[in-house]
Length: 416
Image 1 (spheres, rainbow, N blue to C red):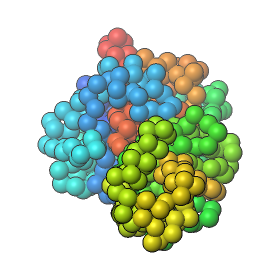
Image 2 (cartoon, rainbow, N blue to C red):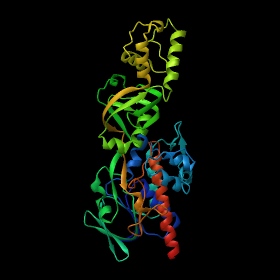
Image 3 (cartoon, rainbow, N blue to C red):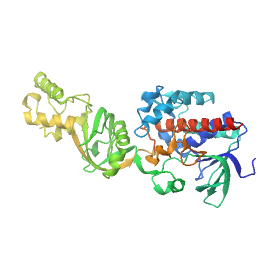
Image 4 (cartoon, rainbow, N blue to C red):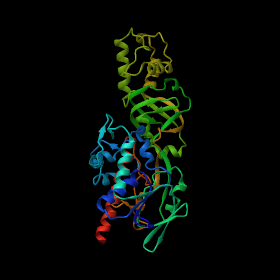
């Protein structure tokens, strides 16, 4: 056990990015003295809760360019980095460590054990195997230079020296979390929530909670923002992949307007209005004696179809042949532009993600090294990089960690 407070490398943050950086360095430099400092009493907490406790390790997209399209902030950067290290590399790394991953129908990848503890155990066991030191309850409050070394100061008065430092503290909703990085000269972009659901102020659909539309389109009225996919009605409003993806891409805009806006839902996906009108009229002519309310179209759930008919002021006993033109138009509107007055948001499960953090303009992105301070590196969500839900945020953590680690290893080789 190492007794000195002097290390080759200190990693600030005991999450996915921190551990992965440490392990990638240790695998290449077995004699490197590495210390992980974690501010809380627990390690890898986000790994623990991810994917409902199953850990959504990555996404089954092995094309670097396509993979990068899932990042509202950092797409251009990740496109370049994924050409060096992407999802296929992560799958291969975990496989080598004895952790098999499986792919679900939506592309998300989980350990076959369906337990995040499998990933946690793998990372911690590998850290112990490589003699990486880990200290919890060690909150860093400041970094200063002592000659060519970093002096890493802790909240409890402790201090550690290191040749190199990696900052992998994750995202935080509080700007003050980043203050000590700002002191080092870095630009900090205000952290803003990403990946959240929409609160419906009127709650006109709340009694239909649990009902979903398999292929909806959700738009933010008056903007270019829209996403398509499954949509889930909840007791507080709207959720599901279409909403979660939309929240990520519109995160900065929605923050600015304080999450008060009109969401327009097409329950039948991205459709042409005139084609849909034509289809409704054709159905009206073909099934003239069929009651409208009890015969859902577009494979919509019965109760959802009934609610849309109610909003279109459809009499319950009307058959298609008796349907006034006015009601048909209203039904069309409810199908493709159903308005929800959104006022507020709810965090999606426990997967709190932020955009913002350290400005990418401050980083040498070929090395994940600070342009302000030599030998100071960054990995993970502390950077202004964030992805959609589905394993993309972990993937950016693994990738940026790998790139930072390779730069550190290469520097050491050149010195050697």
